[in-house]
Amino acid sequence: MMTTYDALGELRGDVKHAVIDLLYRLADDELVIGHRDSEWTGLAPILEEDVAFSSMAQDEMGHALTYYRLLHELGEADPDTLAFTRKPRQFRCCSFVSLPSTRDWALSLMRQFLYDAQESVRLAALTTSTVTPLAEVARKLRGEEKYHLMHGRTWVLRLGNSTDEAHEKMQAALNSAYPHALGMFEPTEANEVLAQSGVCPREEELCHQWESAVAPVLTDAGLAVPANARPIHGGRVGTQPAALAELLEGMQLVHSSDPSAQW
Image (cartoon, rainbow, N blue to C red):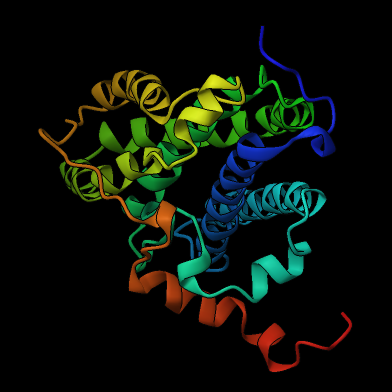
């Protein structure tokens, strides 16, 4: 029978280190994807999507804060320090969330769908985690994230089945994004400890669930998953693309200009 941890303070040794590893990945993904979504504020092609992406960005930032607070309870730095003072190599987000939008609406929509499908699968698994505070957070966030997934699914189907031009752009976005999306499931040294202690399933298992979830939607949109796509790894162990450094430079600018200021 697996041990249940009703409070974060009960975590010890390898399990504690593994949970910290997981929380950094969750928090950093949310922070960075939230920032990327926010870049469409005032620039989205229609007002409805301007509001939608701004709202999703706010949600993701809030989720990042929740995870950073859990990390703080485990002895890590406070949320502002974690978000605004770390260097790119210290982040554990996947490369997928770091990819610049480059004003490519199709890529941003495809990323939002693929990312939120991953988050839906992961949060569902975490609702039964042996770490009770994490399970409680997962149940709360899962309710919010279902609307993000509905949004992405709607647009993938709409544009995939639209004009030839729209379809081609969505297929090109899928081709570009899919290897990075597979990288969301890059295993770390914590993989086995997390699975064996019942904190969360192995990344390989989550990836299979995600592929099963996104495939029918992509098929219904007339889109083909790239054959033999190889996952792009590195982000989970701090090997980050240059795009993350550029993002952090802008996001951390105000804080770095006067770290001692009280906001």
